[in-house]
Amino acid sequence: MRSRYERIIEILRIVAETDEVEKNPDLPLYHLHVLDSMKTVRLIVEFSQEFGIEISPAEFERERWATPRKIVQDIESRV
Image (tube, rainbow, N blue to C red; front, top):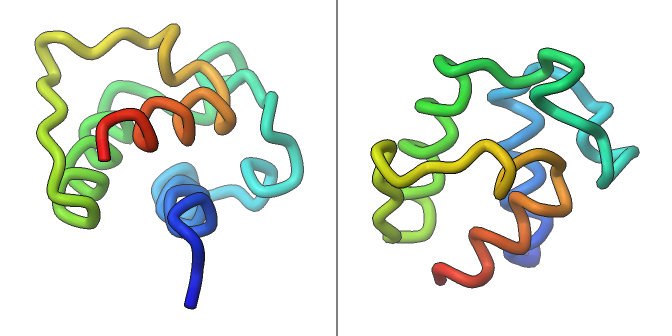
């Protein structure tokens, strides 16, 4: 069974369409245009469905999701 960390990274890999998120936990996702606003919305929907959490796009801050490591920390804190 996959850990929550592995599932978060797997969802991120699928939405971001790159394996780089698995290899580099400090990859600057927005700076390198790995994520954009549409992919961010997809992530919010996927994480909400997968983990039963509410993530409001209105209160979303890019800095909290700047890297794969930060996304994992944020989702872990919400679950």
